[in-house]
Amino acid sequence: MSEATVKLAITNTYEGGAEIKTEAVVTVPLPLPAEDTDERSDWADDHIFPETGAGRTRGNAWYDVEIVESSVPELLGLTFRFG
Image 1 (cartoon, rainbow, N blue to C red):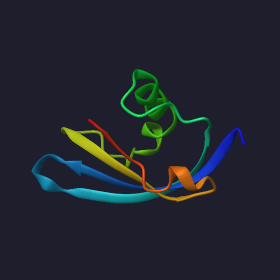
Image 2: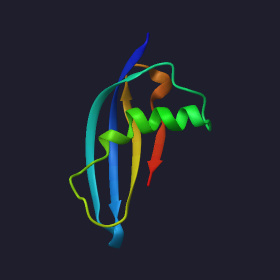
Image 3: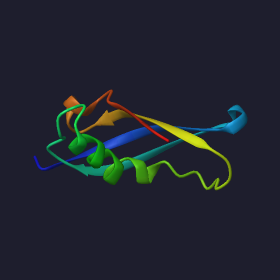
Image 4: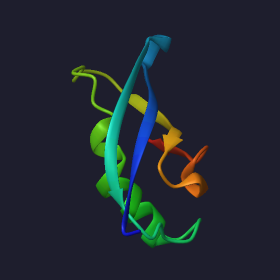
């Protein structure tokens, strides 16, 4: 299998503690690079980070993302943090 369909649970946290929670279903390429490598970081930047936007453009923020459903079981439960 060269790609997987995943459901992402996304929490955008902004200065002052405001949170916006969203979900996205996307198709991502496989294989997933090894954990704790530049290649994994680049993969997440290219395929996970673009789904984090909630339309809020002011202030500092960070984004927590978890794969909560996946057509490839090995991806289930993976988490990512951006920002």
